[in-house]
Length: 314
Image 1 (cartoon, rainbow, N blue to C red):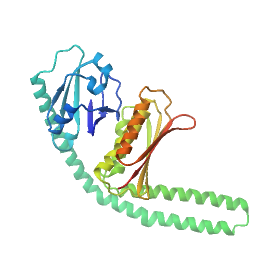
Image 2: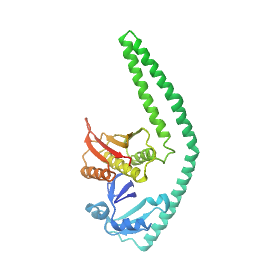
Image 3: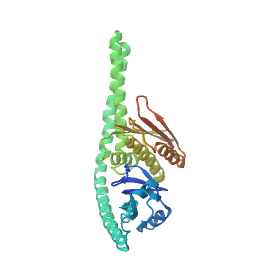
């Protein structure tokens, strides 16, 4: 699997093989692995149960771990496990893994630099579009809504007044959606800012599933401390992983800017039972507590689950 270390856990990015892991799932990080990864070194773990639990020992043997190079790509780990009963990894395997990780990490970092360059070229266009939507389209819609409200007050027929009220409500909803779009555009190029990182995280998690996601951002998120943004994303990944495990078909992720805080809501329609649901809920609570936040998990009428976390900005 490819994973991203986050404190004492590894967030699964891409799993394959004998274990039924899902993207966005978290597994504990053994102390030895955490120490070696901090130095950018490869490692061989003798006991797969340290990572994947007691059941893993029946399926897996040694686990080879190495980082994907320095720089941004170095935040990712590759973990390769041999089947139980296989020959152990050798020093040559360790060296080959380190070399492979270095080359792949360099390629990923070069791709990241190229993408940032493209994002910089698009930044001015994004600002221009956002300004045009805010200064022209939204203001005109607002003015049209005010005019319709005035007409509704003077209309003699109740049916006409009701129709105008309905149209005014639709205009208000359109204005809110446009404002959300403007805020999203002003968060910066794709890959920068919490709003775009959340979109990336959602689509990365569901890429190999049939789940249909909807992501919305309401309000000005602004710049956040990196640790806070990572914590919010970790809560979102955990909730999304739970939705995937429960065979959800639809997923709605909403990030809302409140006065002094941010609210993250992840709602799905999954109904399948899972053995580790309580563990995931506990982990969401722990991640929220580390941010000084609150988190709740509740059922949705008709089936499904809603996870809500309110995180203070400071």
